[in-house]
Image 1: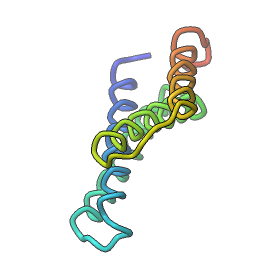
Image 2 (image 1 turned 60 degrees about the vertical axis):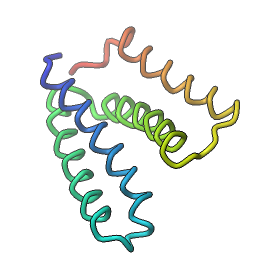
Image 3 (image 1 turned 135 degrees about the horizontal axis):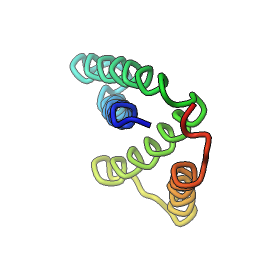
Length: 112
């Protein structure tokens, strides 16, 4: 798989995480700047995902995207929004990371 595919997927993850962070900051779409920012971020996330999908199956790309996005947004929630994570939440996040690692290291399905 070429570097552009991975860069596009990582960029999609980053923009999705930024959009989700702005979703919290938009306060149910009542603040215009965070609302506009989240729309732009989500648009860029999906655009970059389509680039990654040229080389990567949708199921695997989405598994990596959503898995890493969940972990990243959980960390952002912990740090920026002072949301708490209990033991089962941390264990679940570790299992998600483990699943992404297994897919990338051992699956022969990662490329078309």
